[in-house]
Length: 328
Image 1: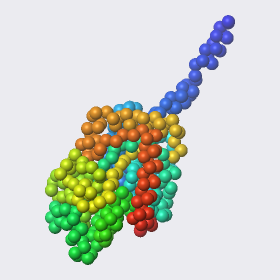
Image 2: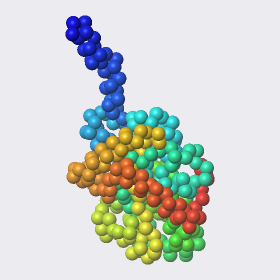
Image 3: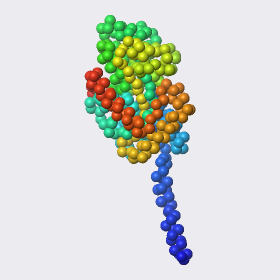
Image 4: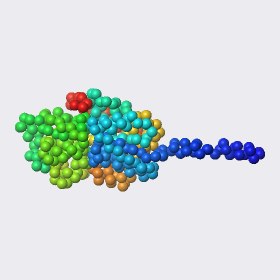
């Protein structure tokens, strides 16, 4: 083989500079990742996003940017992400309150939430808590119900938005107990809790994590948890069943989603890496310290959870006769 032939063969084997660059770009991720949170800073979805951001940063060595885009009960953030390239560089938080309850309760959502996103990984589960102001003249759920029926006036309550898990949990409470309610929707959970603590609302169901500082400060008192089990964060607080409200069990959960056309292999990779990161002892401790119950799931398990929860909450919505109009 002469010199010219050898050089030609070597040239075929060695990629040109632009080819090497193209190959490098195929390795995910080759640039920063964004996680969009469709609610304000400080809520449970924001906390979950930052936990996952730390995991992906450590795993991939790329910056992970948390971007809060609140409004319209989370729909603004969802519409934004649904219209972006499905390349894995923009993910979004979600869960029961954003990806399951609205599709089965809100008639005219501006996007099809189920078809627009693919489940990637579940982060955690958490309970809702029925709370009132520390000065409120009710110390048990039975006291609250009796007060409402004696006054013959609706109880006011706040939620983190129309069609949220807190909204539907509250309506289920009203339907189960026969108590009339008046709903005050807010952009985020913290605003509803502040108004409850200040006595502007009769009660509020809230996810446990953002409640912890207000409970510790004595600004709110917890009457019951909605889970079928007591939580170790509030071991002295009874379940709704123990408090006298039968057949009432609700738990919430959070996860990470992506645009629906993401490549299945990338969905599986991200789901596996996030679930493995969440299962590490250090991360499990951080999840519990934030008020969550650690429940990591990879993409396949999280897809099954979404499907079963959609069926369950569709039944609950029909039984509770909750039918909502978006924006009202």
